[in-house]
Picture 1 (cartoon, rainbow, N blue to C red):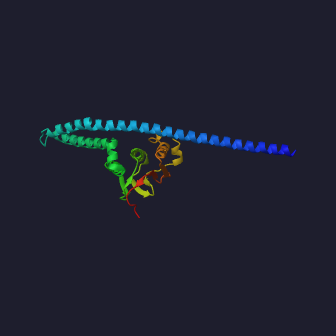
Picture 2 (picture 1 turned 90 degrees about the vertical axis):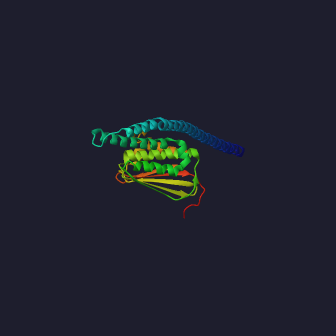
Picture 3 (picture 1 turned 135 degrees about the horizontal axis):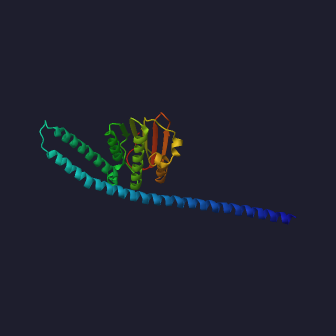
Length: 261
């Protein structure tokens, strides 16, 4: 009887061991699958980003080299037209030159925003400041940008990705917030940079908005959150109807300068 009990105990122990081993194998397979899935998503995203940036670059050069030049010729043509002050057409020509100047300026700004190499050359701080200045030119918003003079480095691919996320975020604010002020703060925390975007707009229900399809709010808030995650960052949104919106983006970075006290 004792022998049978010991055999039963041995079988139970062996069964438990095999069950634990099986669970371990399943967990390992799931982890490996998730890792491969994440890597696959990153590869697809990087490929998609590369294609998108090449399109943006070509479009930027096309705008600058062709449309910009043609408008410059039009501006020159309008400038050489000789009319007396009292002629009725003089006012029309003056207004037309003003409109052409505005269009040239807008196209130049658009070309700069699209060009990947320029973003990498001037850095994320100058790129964000340029976007805010462009928004100010509409006379519909007041903007402010505060940051400490600290040197940091971001992976070039991540920097472009971060800039595109910020562009989408600002675009959503312009289209949906009905805000008057947009404030941006950049701080440094250990090995991360943290952008905070605050507007005084109408606000919204974050949980409800996260469930909406992308077409309803730009590329979609959920998509923006996921894009930040794919470059090792984090995007969080704090908002309530009637109380404005705060969006925080944290991205890994190498802080090479002295951090503020």
